[in-house]
Amino acid sequence: MDRPQPLEGIRVLDLSQIMAGPYCTMVLGDLGAEIIKIEKIDGGDDSRQMGPFINGESTCFFQINRNKKSVVLNLKRDEGREIFYKLAEKADVIVENFRPGVTKKLGVDYETIRSINPSIIYCSISGYGQTGPYAHKGGFDLVAQGMTGIMSMTGEPGGRPLKSGIAIYDIGAGITSAYSILAAYIHRMKTGQGQHIDVSVAEIGLPWFIWEAAAYFANGTIPTATGSRHRALAPYQALRTKDGFMILGCANQRTWENFCKNVINRPELIIDERFKTNADRVKNVDELEQLIEAELSKENTDYWLKKCEEAGVPAGPINNFAQAVKDPHYIARGLIQEVEHPVIGKMKTIGIPTKFSETPGKIRMPAPTLGQHTEEVLQAIGIEKEDIKRLRENNIIK
Image 1: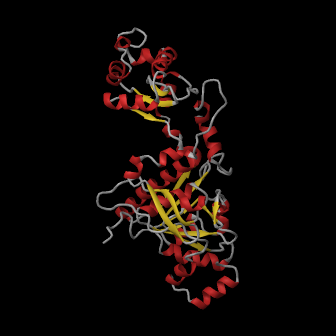
Image 2 (image 1 turned 135 degrees about the vertical axis):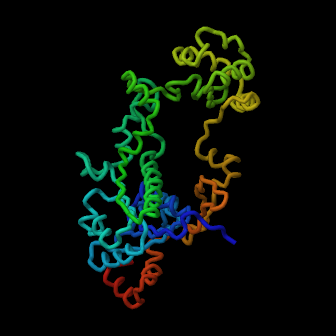
Image 3 (image 1 turned 120 degrees about the vertical axis):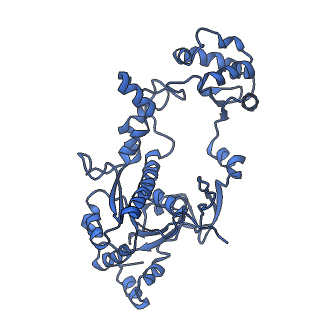
């Protein structure tokens, strides 16, 4: 017997596409919410056109749209909007990531939906938010990375600005939206009151700059690129070994001393004036790095990782993605799952990172084909088969 999921019974209408909104609704769907994905009539979610493809189906769309039902609806037509209003009457949450102003033009904005369903929780995800001097602009993850300053502090000193390897702000906007929706839902449980949530891709990452904000607001220090080095700890970085690189994390005095005595067998470094305290090590990190790498270059990465493990010193490999998804720890924790898709066939996907003792998340269904659930969802709100046929012929649904 399947155990219950934490968000069972919550219905979400998902008007979003590409990444930030779909990531948010995927998280909610993994935890049991019913996600009805409303896709546009001309091709659906734009990520359906993003390769690679298997049997004509986008694997990009596959990876971020599981646990959702697909309904193709033409919101530019009156009959399409009327169907959406019927769905909104019974919904708990709506998620959209149009540019500000578009939902109003379509007649599916918060004020319109609130008049139909006063308790609706309506989450808008946009590049710069619904207000402010940049609200009218389209927003992208890469632009947000440049705007917030993270690219100025990513990469090697003196090098070109670098973006993160993944779309951190799109994903961050999705996560921020998910927990904001849950907070609003708790508020509604207490008061019966819905609300509008305004999430900006360009804003969500700025609060993550904890150490950087501490330094800048204290003494005006502007963070710059430091490679893999930490701004306040040393050695806490990637270091070269005989056959590659490894991560070493001496985040406190105890682990530094353990590393010196029990890993590289250089106990004299503990009392070396250049490295006695963390502040000393940060100040003299160039010399420190050269000295440590001179020792690490004597053996392969695996040797040093084993030594660090035995000494209780935090360390790890620098995997590529193929190595990461084959890591036995991730596999044992169920983070790599295989899903059967009606067109793609069997394909692996990243699983659910949160582990609930009583209400575990679950991949209940693969990403839907375009319009796979249109008829099912419309029949559930009382639309007869004959009307569904007519709506399809008139390009209102697909």
